[in-house]
Image (cartoon, rainbow, N blue to C red; front, side, top):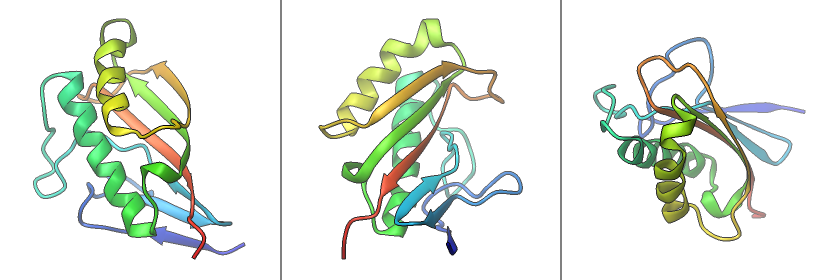
Length: 128
């Protein structure tokens, strides 16, 4: 099975040795993306709602580069710096941006490097 990396300047550049996303076997796998502005690299927003919206825009850019969108997402993994405090705000923003039927999702508390939220997704490529 061939792997094809996804690269776009409409999402933050990787901070380490990984791809923004990979297409393989008719699926799109994204890296865990944070709330960085793709142009400046600066964290966007002080609240979990603001940061979640930026993360979702970043994910949307990677998916679009592969020819997919949120409607094609089947699995989401969310890391929240403060799960107890931020879940409700994150979930409200997420619900406003992720269309029905929403994908399966795992949300966990994690130690994150100066951000409140990080999300990765798995999507099925639409049939051409």
